[in-house]
Figure (cartoon, rainbow, N blue to C red):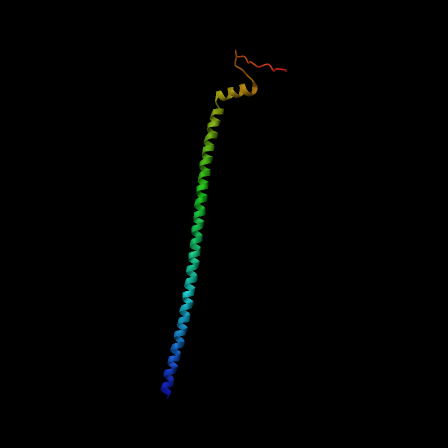
Amino acid sequence: MKFFKNIFKNKKQKKKLTRQNKIQTGIIVLIVCMVLGAVGFNSHRIKVKSQEYAVKEAELEAQIAEAKAEQEALEEQEEYMDTDAYKEEIAREQFGMVKEGEYILKEKASNE
């Protein structure tokens, strides 16, 4: 009879071990799924950030191009302002100056 009791104990222990193995395997699978989920979520978040940075980079590139164009225009204006033609234009328009031998013709104001 002892022999039969030992056999039954071993079967019970095997069932118990099998049940424990299933629980441990389930826990491991759950942990792996959680880790994969976290990695997937972070991967998606990084992808979205990357797209946002690409859009921002394009906007900044456009601003740089605009600033360069404005700088070129200002440099051209500065060069023009350094010429005699510009100085003459300002003297005529703002100060009413004329060259020798030139006359200024003005309209009479009509008083009605």
